[in-house]
Length: 170
Image (tube, rainbow, N blue to C red; front, side, top):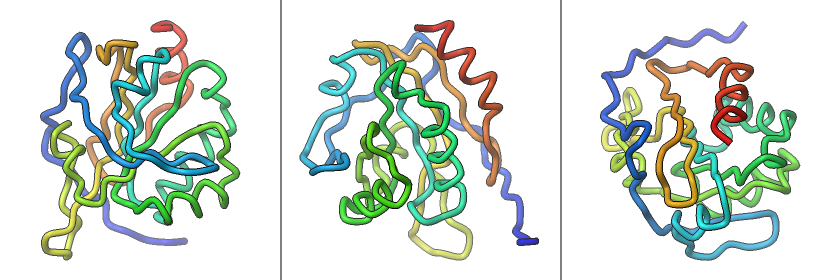
């Protein structure tokens, strides 16, 4: 069994339901290519689930994206992720996980997570941070309909409850 320390986070200073999610532009990677894209361009096509997650290759990222792939939420709405990994790393991650119907924003500086209040410093790595696991259900105008934000690392949502919330909000 792999052992690791549980890290409790300070309370998130994140936008909440009813607020408009901050817009940003970053490289958006899909299974074919990437290009600079704004969040507002993504949400303009319909409801969007924005997923902040740990860097590609970390076990939480693998677990989360396998779960989302298997639940086929991308059949209900656009599903996009964002983390500190590079576009090249995203391409490999999408291929390795067989994720053909989601896209991933690349934010190596972690500025977007900081703007959303969900950034956390990695223990023992000065100046290195990544997003805490967070889900934001956004409407076409980026209004937050529902959110779930981890309060510790590692922590995962109750996916059945989250799915029920998504379906209720859609």
